[in-house]
Length: 159
Image 1 (cartoon, rainbow, N blue to C red):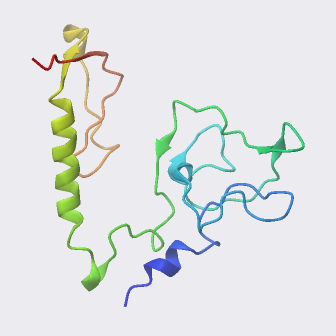
Image 2: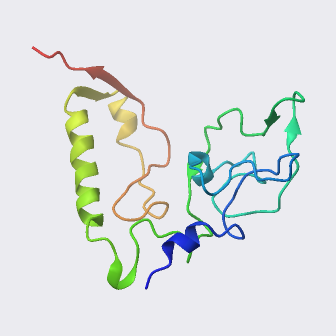
C-alpha cells in the first residue's frame, strides 16, 4: 500500500512559509502554494519545498504579513530537494501511475505544437557556437548552458 497522501501532508517535512501572528502557518499544506517548490537564494528561511526553521513574518503594515519573497528573484529555481520519501507525483512501487510516461509525452507534444507557431532566431549565432553544455546540472535528458543564449521570438503569421 502506498501512503502518498500522508507523506504529502507531513508538516514536519514540508515548507509552510512563515508563522502568522495567529500561530498558523502562512501556507498550510491543505492549499496549493506554487512557490513552495521554488528555491530562492535570497530567502533562505522560506524558500524551497523542505521545511526549515520557522521565522516570524516581516510586516510592512498591521493588516498584511509580508515575506522577503515579494520581489521575484531571477535566480530562483524549481526544486524538490530534501523531499525523498515525501514527494511522489506519480506514486511509487507496484501502484505507480501508468500515465506518467503518457503525461510526459503529452507535455512534450504540447510544447512542440506551441513552438510551431513561433520563429526563434539566435541573435548572435557566432557566440552561440561557443556555448558549453552543463549536463551535470539537469537530469533526464534536459540540457542547460554555461551562459544565457539570446534569441528573438516572433509569432508566425497565420496565412
